[in-house]
Image (cartoon, rainbow, N blue to C red):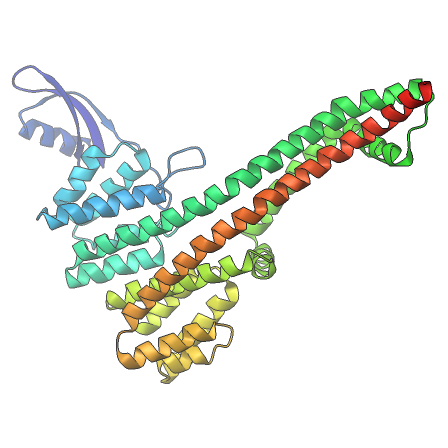
Length: 404
């Protein structure tokens, strides 16, 4: 267990630190061996196993994993042993989730347990690919190179996520602005304008009456409507993330949505190719490699195809090329390239190149999608505001014309 202590050294200075011991008595003995007189000794609270942070606490992010792999690779390169490298990272870690994780890594190492074991205890943070690569590297003594490769891969994934997130920010802002303007108009503007015509006994045109009726209904029931809207949003998120039916529905939507389906397909192929390349270079068996790669693929049909390749094709003696060519759902260009590279004997390199190629395709597709989405959102926003504005301006113009 980890204890945080405050103690006085031989010179009378007060120092603070942490000590790892089985119990309080053992911790006090360790402090005395350092010629320190303890002032206080408090156990460090740890997150429960299997979780690195609750909803409101810190979590290990992709950026944290990039930092971890980068500095572990760097320290191993300069000759630092693994336990010392972990101790250095613990001393410099500010984020509670990362510090707790590294302390657990150190505890497992001091007990003689494998390095990869701690990573495997957090499948929601560290993927099966990550754990398998660390396990294979630990067995082969090639942790430095593996952490360097993982750092490159995680950095690439983080860049892709940032590009997708950035592409969605502007449309979301426009959608939010359109919603806010609509709420303002139907809550404040339309009721007052409609009240003017009602009090003046003037009948607006049919077009305006329809807009006024819809606007007044929304304005009178805005709280109920917003409550139902937020409930529907949260219910949909829960349905999509927690139920198999919801996941299938989203998968079907993304695989058939124009403009998105190509990005979704390219992302699946990129994940498959990059993961297979990394695992094969690490020396994992091909069946295990394809099985792990299947878990990284977003499109479910692609995932099932990869599992059939591993369990029904390769397990029955087919070559990699033959097993891939049996799956018609995968692009023919990809399966043919895999078959050719297998015969040439450099399938790992070709898969890596294929992953890089599809990464470039995804970047170009995202840029094109953003270029199309932005004007469409502006048109929708302009049409909505213009519709409400016309419904107000036209009867006012008619009323002023009739007065003359």
